[in-house]
Image (cartoon, rainbow, N blue to C red; front, side, top):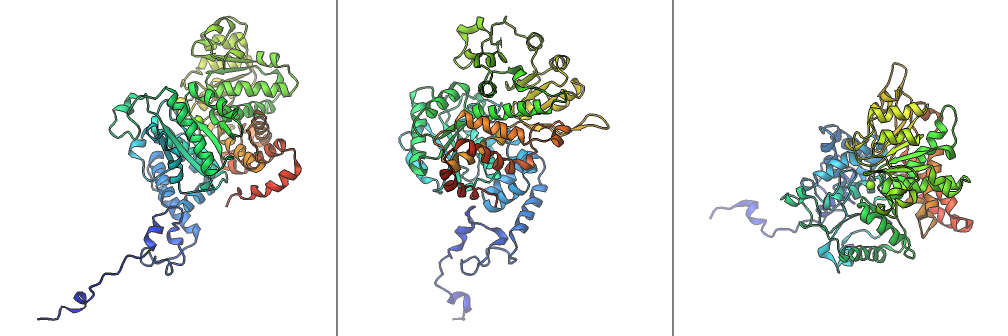
Length: 547
Ligand SMILES: O=C([O-])CC(=O)C(=O)O
Ligand SMILES: [Mg+2]
């Protein structure tokens, strides 16, 4: 018989080496920056060049540059996050201004709308109604032990886009990325999506929908599931783990916040009620400082268009800001007006008003037209958070401009498609006099040959990261309204004349991380009066510095 040579003789097949699995783990993968390949069984699994981390970041930046449009960029970035976490976060921290709008508002809104075609590797934990009784086990499945912040949504009010069901994971993941951009270690973050169904008919009919195909559970079982989630998080990651509630519908948002805020030792806040409130109040404080003729915070009259969680939170926090400045609470409340879907919130409507609106019901006649309400109230500040695009019409902006040299106008609804007016409209209709900011950033507006505006980013992204840092470092057991007010004041004071000159009342986005650390330091000092405790814990702040 003919000799069949070496191929036939190499009969016993050696087992596969151990290295491959480590390359599939986003937490350990280092791309071409991987060293010690020999010892780890990685030879041949990567191209031969060994490069510095920076080269990997450059490679990722190039790849991003090849994407066509924001949504493609989002997909590319999430793919990077789920394959090579280190490069992803280095890129995010080095290029925050460019990446934030791709990973966060406005693009994250589109991502949530199209999540069915998107989901790749785990971005967090999904807890569905069908998991009731077993949530502890789900938490055990999360691979990291050092979680400090759980970002939880039930997907019922995603930005201004309404019920997105289980697709809301995009927002929990996006908020987590903002924390990480501000220096929180990625392993300290756990995005959670609670899925008790959706009332979004389009999703229910979509064969690619990723969540439970049933109507939202409005029974006690919903509350019980939330309880189980909170208990399981605290058990698995420790009782100080921050519970961050995000994008719940108002019917649950206020209730859930109140319930856990008053539970002993649960460290919790609602970003839409308290974070947006603080960023709004900060914007008002900074705008008053920016007024060319000078201004007094206690003399402002604020009209909130929309009486959902953001504006009610802001109204309450503004009242607190005024009382801190010596105004009696009853007088402070008279300076704050709400306008909801039925018009001005006034006493004659009291029997139909929710508990959250009632304290703001004014002694005035009913009014259903926004421009007419402005004529009668004469506000100095107009804040929109109603997700009614175009609600700030030319007439509205002109009315504000007739009453004020520099009307303060914030269009907070997200994403850009939901803003009450655009930056360009605010400047055009006020003849360049408005102090304007928006929840999703608008690009700079060239108003005239001499004047280009770069309006501010009135987004809670300037608040929740420092609040979390301050809470962790001070070991606070409760995140109080005072902490949010301190954060708002510190943020407002950080805005300087150079920014005012271009119409900005917030720091630029490329300063979001340094701003978070500075605001956290102020908030922490105010919070913790025990010096020894501060010193003992302040070393922990180092852990949150940017790598
Ligand atoms: O996510 C954002 O950009 C701000 C926010 O919380 C919201 O609009 O619900
Ligand atoms: Mg939100």
